[in-house]
Image (tube, rainbow, N blue to C red; front, top):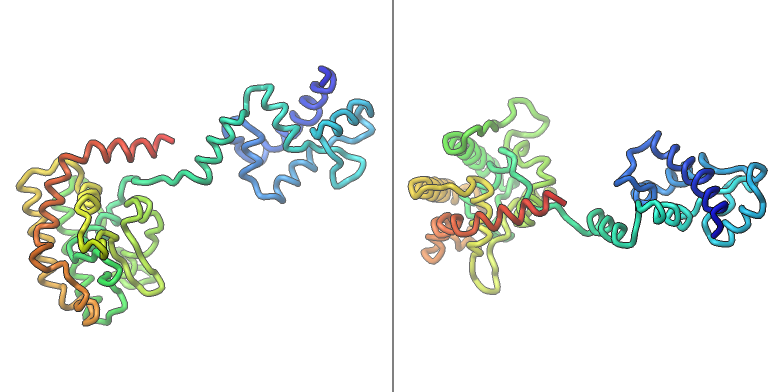
Length: 309
């Protein structure tokens, strides 16, 4: 392509398109090409039309060459020409603003890469510890907010006890149940937890329509609890610097919650499926607390790596 054609493509088409986009949106990674990939089709067409070049203002020979190379095409108005994706790519490739590697990295980040393991909010910590204490480790034994009035009363008590325990255990903990909400106090705690599945690497599960929440920790085929997952959740709540005394207090708190409230929170059908009070699972929480020390550095690095991207 001649230098003259390239100059027209850059100054008459690309610069004008860049100016229009910059005035209405933030340019992503200094690239118009990447920015347009994230825009709605109508917005893309509007930006292209607003930066179109009238045919009467351009050299016909240059226009024909740019059309033949696929860098521009006729716009909605047949007397105007607009850039194509190929044209934007050509200019930005020469400006070192885009490359195949940059494109693949951006698509991977935008469409494929999920941000795992963000720091839990105080509210999320309340929910996770409540589920751990109740041993809601399987879809068949969830914390079910539609199990009736008695269950709701007990869930409310569990939440209040959990808030008090975390307030005494974690410096700077500030969560409390809102006084006035459109939902009931219990439902307000479990509402708007859209980030919690990602923040717990999909261990937290819920069915909002059925009012159910649980932790995906139990492997039914193997008949085993994943102490690694449980340990990870406890680390997310309490951090990695737990003394033996701290571990004992947490284990004792969880056991107290379970044996005080289990028979009132779970339905008869759920209690039939509830195996997590059996002796073989008795030490699951204490074992998981003990494992935090050996895994916390790895988890910190894994979660940090995702946040940097």
